[in-house]
Every structure is written in C-alpha cells, then in structure tokens.
Image (cartoon, rainbow, N blue to C red; front, top):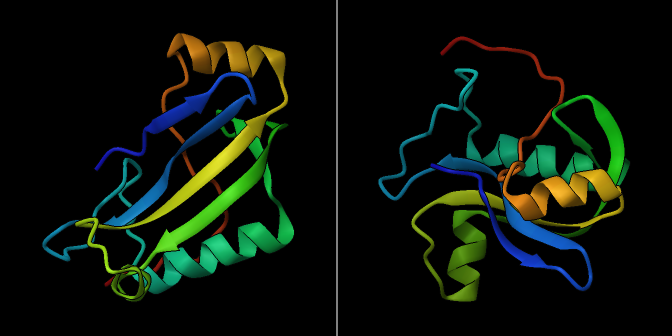
Length: 126
C-alpha cells in the first residue's frame, strides 16, 4: 500500500497524503519496507503522540524542521463508520506546509513523492 503524496497546493506550499497504512481492504495488517507492522491502535497512538509532541517534518529521516503539520486524521474503522465512508484501509492522512525551499522544489519535481514515519518503538515478535 503506497504512502504517496496525493495532493499539492502550490500557492500555499501544502502537501497532503498517507503517512502510514496499517491494514488493507481485507483487514490484514500490512508489512512496511522495514518489515514492521502497525496495528490500528498502535498507529493511532503514534499519530496522537506526534501531534502532541512534534508536528515537525524532516526529510529522509535526517534534516528536521522542513515542514509543519497542518492536518492529521487516522482513519480507523470506527472513524470511517462514523463518517459513513469506507476507504478499504486503516491509514493516517496528513498535510504539511513545507517551509524549506529546497525540499519544496524536490516535492514539486516528484523527487520526494511519499511520506515516511520515523520514530522509536519496542519491537515485538508475534
């Protein structure tokens, strides 16, 4: 499941897209490129902590402070049901105002096409 940037607002330097996808249409947990999985609750908890404590974006998990969070919603099964929608996935949707000129140029050119969450966790074997 891709975590691509799906919408740009060039005038306001906004980028929107999926930060993380937990499960697909069949409800099966998805494995990310590092071999990790996030169940719905863990994804929601991570998003809440990010909104409370950070709200800053980095680039390539290195340089930080290149964008500021302007929108965040974890589309859990319960949230989707309350909204009367079904996205066919459980996922975290975000929007950022990009403040770094070079990063914005790379996003607009298509060089940076996706979001990637970065954080710390305790790895568990299931």
